[in-house]
Image (cartoon, rainbow, N blue to C red; front, side):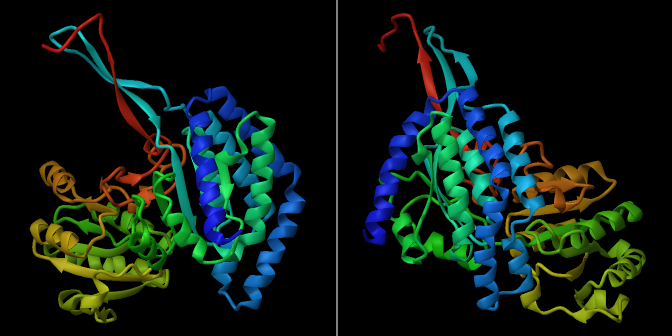
Length: 418
């Protein structure tokens, strides 16, 4: 069959499977997740052997060491995937929960019931563990899912696909509830994005170029975030020791992730004391500072920032630094150059903290805490499928509840509309 026919058949069968998943009892879903976890451990050597084929191909293609590291499946990777499945199985099932009940004057009872989204398509790069994480969350939320991993992880993903299918069948669930696109051709992505009759939502995970391609070519709603240009604003009355720890953690702990700080904004009243203190910390960690003219006058070792630096997601030990005259200028800078991802303020002033929370339009806004907390596990979701910077249908980390929606349910005792 052609790629287009293959994808169309997968989408149709996923739609049928989604109806069974929508009414699947929690215990049955948990059983499937734990069965997958057990099979991962039992077939660890087989998974690693298949992964070696992908690693060999990546090395032959001259891919970077960092890329190959993300692609590799080790014993620790398998253990982490199995533990993740167990953690998702332990989470509360959102499907069927009732919220916002009210009684109308005519006596009818109006509520909202949480239901699965239906069929979800996920397009992602390199990391085979995403295959398991995404499958687990979609299954627990009662959805069917079609997964399109990168061609560089083909053998790893197909091995994981076989394990998932076997576990679903053993648990009495439709194998088509989790499907992995079995072809390498790039045309498979376009074919998947055209299945608006059967697929309800597309979630791309990867670099900005991948996400922009998906958004530009999809006929299906897309949950996205292009990049994480995250800011920390150090206010005029901030506790400078607290600010030092927060800014260092936000930039240095994992500089290559989307919730790492990329720009540090410092109130002019704090700049002369704070910037030399912070520069010493950053210098020891190998951070390159690119500063505004005032920053460079305080820190002669800093490089002069260009206009291109302010909206850049460096994903590296590079930091843009700007001295601002007040919080108005800080908020304006975030609005102009930010990406609606994660922004934080360090301050001792309650009113300015509350104003920052209200006015900064990002998926997670923090007071006196590191940007690195924009993560599903850290925010109590248990797990996440990604971070959305679009506001329909979710904003921020997407856990189980974000993979569902609500419908109105109404109960009466014979009422008719007059």
